[in-house]
Length: 547
Image 1 (cartoon, helix red, strand yellow):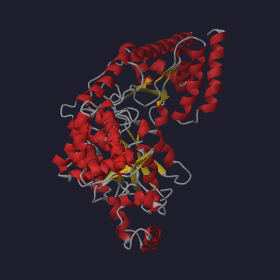
Image 2 (cartoon, rainbow, N blue to C red):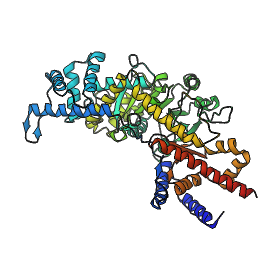
Image 3 (cartoon, one colour):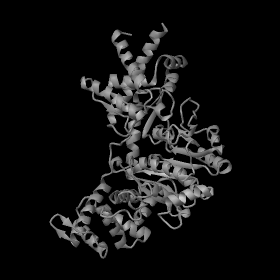
Image 4 (spheres, rainbow, N blue to C red):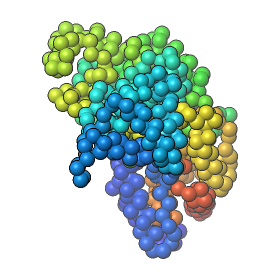
């Protein structure tokens, strides 16, 4: 190793000592700094595949949204117009005025979808036309607080159609109530706070995390205010070739038989492996819970479900136990809109556990929610989440902003009307094509057909690759003489490429996460080539080390 290489490695090792305790998302910022330094030297352009934000957006439902917004503004000016000032929309006759507007603006962007959206509510749900159009009009103007605060009445019904369908359930039979929230991030915060506030989960309780998992679930569980006792359910299954399947063996799922485990948190499909739980594991999980731990609460975060060919959410297969979280961010390219829902079946374990609380705990909750109703004992858990999101005292101003709810409804109906799944297949193809390009240079890691894989991310276990390509001796060298973070920092330093460490998601220690959603297609071939070249450099060092 040359003096230059020795200095490079020492610099990286010093950096690792400073940042090895950071979460992968905070570590990413340090990798970006290093990658940008290389970029500024004119070596190459930085490629940041550490971000999960997609580089596509759903255009047509946005067009419909903004065209409808113009109609809504004209409705306000119809009631009162004085220079820049306007009034509020009126309900009577608004459907007929909407039809007239679409006729006069037949060439407006998204107008055909807009008409189909209104027709969907009328035909599928028998909505009163004036009530349906008025709800959307008043909502997009944003001149009133959300009423009901949990979710607008008509909007909830059409969003439920979409969410339940995509989660593998039947919208006509599902009994789920929805709460519209500011993306999956807000959902996580609200859920944990309400579980604690309602005494059905306590600081220090034992909870299970299905790992690898989106890092904030681990970080929230370890916060001093919660400090849960964490049991990890590992997706440790490997196939006959020694490759990860990212499924959960029975012996891992058996851990849930422990009735001291109060809550299980699942990201399905997983992040970062981006693989859905298969039918066998779903069936066994349901058996374990129903027979051994029937009061287990489950929270499933299913943002990537739309990208898998075979997928069913636990919120549909185990509705009694499961609270579902879904975000629109990835599928529609809408992270900035902050659109998500919490979904919970009417008959659920959360309500049951609240009913079973001792009287002293119930007295505390009666005081907490007493200002909301004369019968606080019977407030459903999902409505408690709404109130808790505003510290109860501000419940009257709770709820997702109404323009956001309109955009959510438009996205939902757009997807429901796409009977041939044209848009869905486009997004799937983007991810799969990029995964193929990434693996062009990763020989020995040939892609295998997997209907449970979303291909939204790729988690590469470098030790598995090392064993397949070079044998166990090279694996031992990596474990003893190298570090997975060192590999990531060298990628950033040498190639201006930013990836995340899988270990930060409670994945294998030498795994790395590549987001397949946010860069140009050809750039994934560059990333694969760089990973291969750096790996070959490690092999050279290993051969020199042996001698």
